[in-house]
Length: 301
Ligand code: BDR
Ligand code: CA
Image (cartoon, rainbow, N blue to C red):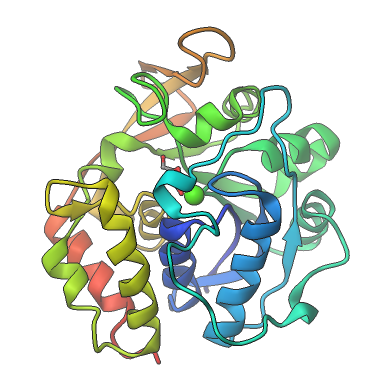
């Protein structure tokens, strides 16, 4: 049986790669895509999700979520992803507006989760505002969630600040709500996303691998401008590969506390302990991960 998942996302170049991998995975059944403001504003992230699905010919509903964090001021990462969120790439076809749900992201997630015959895996790859609002508004959804596999945080270090990763920094109050639930969480943070960076050589292989490969090549070619060591970090892809290929990763259990205010806001204080509710990805089979990345684009159009 395929694993039913909901992806909550702020596309975003690495989000685009992660969603593409999920949509063509034989192991996953993507039920819903919900959008969140993050890398760029909510109008752009929603349009990018609709454009991508139209381009890939996938009929998956998209529900628009929160445009702003719960408490802190909105932040973007246009310096990484460009002003539209997809570098200089432009989708040619008119997006299929029929994919946009009339329900907002919170209600759409709630309906999918409570009506699902199987527990659903949540895959948040942007700031956690929608997920926090879901748990506060519809706590009954917690009973039918298998686990949360998220990109965010770090046991050590940061990218938005020296101690905070972007998705957590962008809405630390929401992140605290999510990490404080008793639900099993897998944290694909900077510890593992940086480790599994993809070499420029591998990125080059996408050229000539069909339309999806060319599209991702174009975006990653832009994304390179923030890297100087010959590799790009496709953070969000780790979550999808964790769900489809958990054997690629090593995890350690921890409890996570999120700092919400002050100089260290967005820091995920990681206390490694066997009875923690969070599995922190601390290692990966990098060679296999890179092969898996290339294989996403083999044989798709
Ligand atoms: C995370 O922040 C965003 O810029 C990326 O899409 C990823 O989800 C990495 O810190
Ligand atoms: Ca993201």
